[in-house]
Length: 116
Ligand SMILES: CC(=O)c1c[nH]c2ccccc12
Image (cartoon, rainbow, N blue to C red; front, side):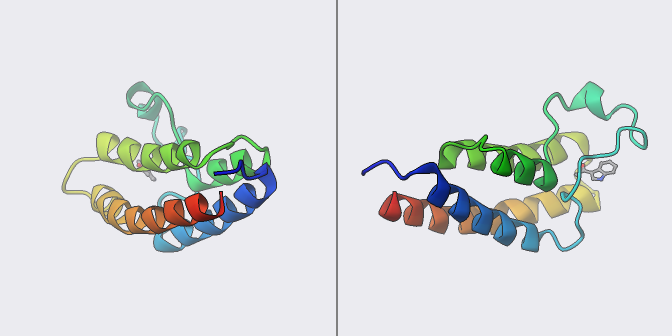
C-alpha cells in the first residue's frame, strides 16, 4: 500500500483513541496512576501508560504506525492486569476494555490498511 502521510494516520488514530476512551466510562485509564497515592506502583509497573499520555504522544507525532499505537493500548491493559488483584473493579474493567477495545482496533486496522 502506498505510505499514508503521517497526518491522515494521526487523524485516524485520534478518532480511534476517542472511541477507546469512550469505553472507559469510569475514567480508570484516563490519567496516569498517581504514584503519590500508590507508592509501590512503579516498583511493579516499569512502563506506565494511560489515555492522556497516548493523546500527548499522538499530538507529538510519536506514533508513526498503527501497531505502535496499539502497543500502548495493550500496555494500559496489561499494566492494570498485572498491578491489580483479579477480584478488583480495576482488573475487571481492564478485561472488559480489552474486549471492547480489541473490537474497535480490529475494525480500525482494516480501515488503516484500506486507506494506508
Ligand atoms: C489503572 C489502574 O491500575 C489504577 C487506576 N487508578 C488506580 C488507583 C490505585 C491503583 C491502581 C489504579
